[in-house]
Image (cartoon, rainbow, N blue to C red; front, side):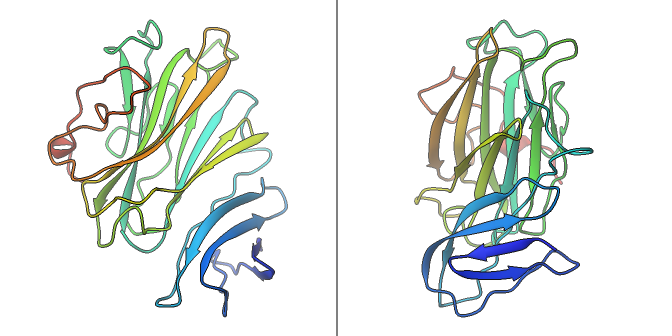
Length: 247
């Protein structure tokens, strides 16, 4: 029952959450979703006349189960039919962290470790579209996020095509009141590529600074999600994509 809009065309999703548009104009367009009880969401899509265009869009509830508190941050990854398996990766300060430049005490939330003290991944979607959702919350007894640096990346685990042409989109929601949207740049080629999307730096007073990274690092056969160079945060080390647990 969500109302979707692409350009001047509208459609309503059926019981499976699917809506179909026909005769759209080729090129970049904005897809917007609105539903009662949910935060309206908008994202860019690239439409081609050469093939059917399949994309995902996720809406978060405005209240009740699954809604965001004022200090929460939610990261939502959606994509198209191909590649079939894109993975969300978030690293951030754990309970022992001393702040932004503490390189040792960090959690890593991803498909094999879905909970990281103050962050949780809801599901590992391996069959296209997503959403994969990571929600960051304040630690127990605090009204603000834990100080430190949080880095979010997307890894092309498997499937044909590449991140750049996947119609992937990342939406970041801050307490349900403001959003930030990202689409991948050109440069991806195959599985093993890493899309480093953004970094958040949380100060001791709880204020948040967002750094837009939005870079593709190709063919990460021996590199890591943590050490992908960004020039913004500290140099991390530790988790090698090649050695991550099998799904």
